[in-house]
Image (cartoon, rainbow, N blue to C red; front, side):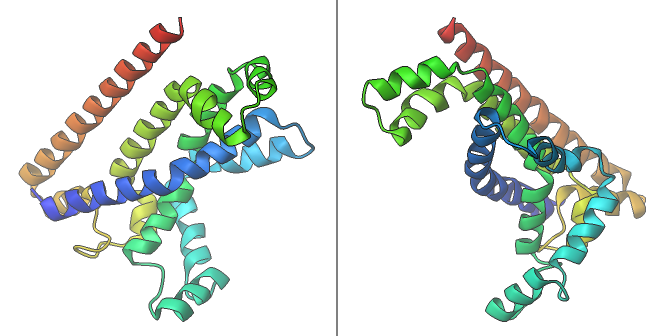
Length: 222
């Protein structure tokens, strides 16, 4: 059992959730209630990670974050190290390839909130931020919880993009999925099986918790 790789996967998932979910709330809320030309194109662009092969997405991320790219040059100029093949580069890639898994469930949840509820709160003198915190987020909670679980499970199990952008550097970019692949390549099926079973159990528990939380929220709203 490669605990270092497993803990790195958990760390990557945790940081992805912390940084992505607030951004996803803003994007999902905007897409749910705004109507403008080109919205369909924006939604299609956000959904690309769902349909692109991981190696294709990983290639474009590798090019976009590499030393020759504007972002790669800026990062290396500020911190003195390349962005690719580092945990930070892996985190940026994780946020990008998890966008649809976070945005789409939240967008559907925000779309289910009646505009009359928000208008009534505004007529009562509630500030927009207070409406978001006290009314919109509680009503959208099932979608937010679904996004949380999907992002966590997808980050833990992602292989292709992680391998392209991060490689397999122990303690830096070698996640559990990469470690499983390495163990299979080394014909260490016992270690690969143990790590695979652990990820399976964690994913099942996460999905069960999400289903329980969303069902309770649905009963309270009912």
